[in-house]
Length: 228
Image (cartoon, rainbow, N blue to C red; front, top):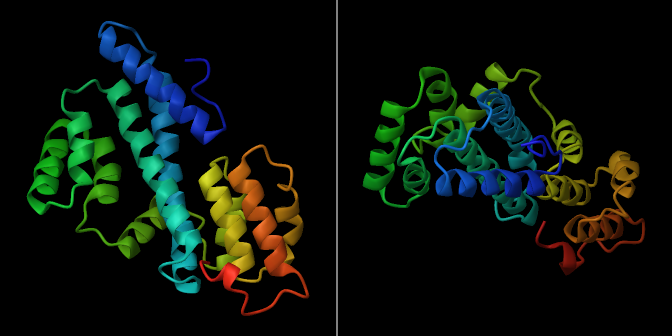
């Protein structure tokens, strides 16, 4: 419990997962609900903030870009952390099945999972969570909701990248670093260089690729950067 507020997103995920397993083997284990509620609210707000950053980047990067794929992967991790925290805060039987269901490619399974969540979740959680998992809600609609719920809209790619660079999530930070190179944001090069010695190898690799992309003698048509 004392490690739940870890800034490192990957470590925080492992802590939450461990608590889930402890709860499964010992259903009467007491977990401070106030701590879980605070962290759950922060995770949901962070997920909405990711949608705010996604908006400007979608207009600037190719849809099949490495950066966008990494961001989508990071946002999937955010959503899983949200569901795992909900299982701790509200030990409702069937939450895990609902999480699997809302990610299913089968429309009927998704609809059944959403209906289950509508029936079991408290209104304050239901109202902010369901738009994030309902496939009928578009990305643009989620961004609009994020601007309303979180505030401080991100209107430019530079603002979005700077926000992601400050993230504790290695996937999101790596996404931002790749985007700096892809969008030729030379003004953010000093921020990128701060992570040359980052402990995460994925972040270090992103830094090396981006610095090469920003180099004055980099070839514009270098195929190594085609995946941006």
